[in-house]
Image 1 (cartoon, one colour):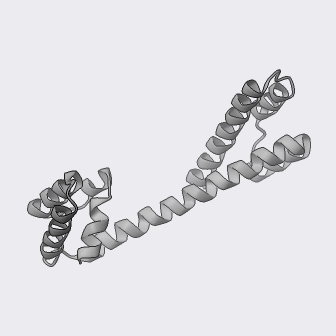
Image 2: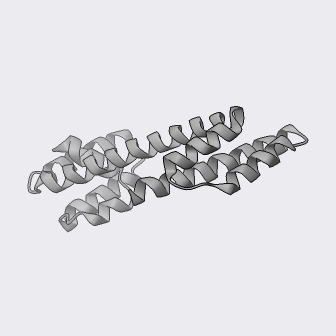
Length: 147
């Protein structure tokens, strides 16, 4: 239970979604602000003690969901990077494949790729590559949420 309580210390706003006893919630918030290693260790033990009276199932379900969301976000990020590189190398073929994969054409990407070809220095090129990535990422995030 102490390990589960330690994981709660690392949560952000998600902690408020759990119906935790007030003493446990306060102990977790206190643990976040502790600088001393020994004080932190004692606080974690105290949290573990308080956790004995809590049903761990909702906490474990929330942590599992957060881990799944994190894995999904990492996959989307890596996928967006691959699409960007593919579009830069094989422009038209990659744009068509991306449109087929996402279900719609994306003329803003073609425009950004045109801008990339006209970039006059490394700084402009990096900026445009970032904009391409963000556009691809936004499309992929929307596709995952909608379908």
